[in-house]
Image (cartoon, rainbow, N blue to C red):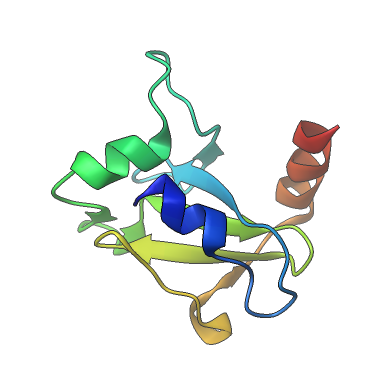
Length: 102
């Protein structure tokens, strides 16, 4: 997914900012947007041929909206910006967004 696209995308529910979060395949655990090499998750997903974990059918990248408390999946490099396809963020995930913005 191109970083320029992220700059113009907003949460369809609240028009708020979206935060890209990578999802660890098989666990559903989100981690920060830079890996140990300093590469952006956005750069990695753009170069990956598979953005969806076929074993679980989950996206490997999500766009989190703190204001709506939703996580929009990015599947095959395409953000699915439909509220009915978004999952609700847990209280811990929302708290992690608040901590990272302070």
